[in-house]
Image 1 (cartoon, rainbow, N blue to C red):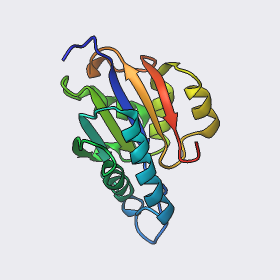
Image 2 (image 1 turned 60 degrees about the horizontal axis):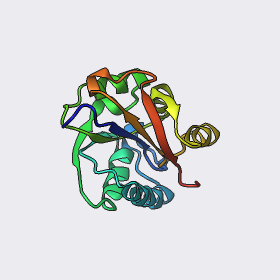
Image 3 (image 1 turned 120 degrees about the horizontal axis):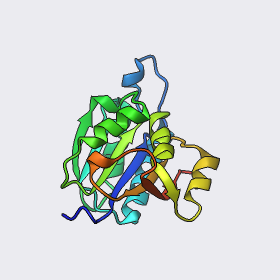
Image 4 (image 1 turned 30 degrees about the vertical axis):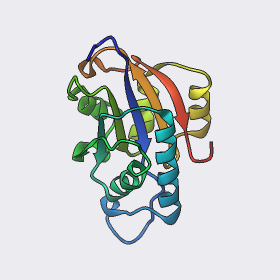
Length: 172
């Protein structure tokens, strides 16, 4: 795989969670979240990105989001459940991404705010069409995702090196 080929990262926030009397890590999806996760999965499928790897937080709501979204994809990528994604800062998420193998060309990270939105903002040195304006206006609501592209290896991922190619949220 050539390093000259742009790599794509999709930063996907978990769908809407419920608030039962459980720890934050154990919160499940709400009914609306289950619907939005499937819709997001269809939108991810429409992107045509052939994901090599999905990195998912170990929290119940992220695992449920991924379980529903991945059913909509034409190809199920290898999935790694990563504890470090839960409550991670943008810098901690970059550290996780810096460890990715070179043969992973297109990855999906299913995580939480404020880390996911912060990472999209920090990585995007440039933007295509109106993606940044839409993301800035909408924020990063539950089940939203941003598609970014980078040149180089995962080890060279740092603030400002990516292009924000697209942004989607359930109300878009």
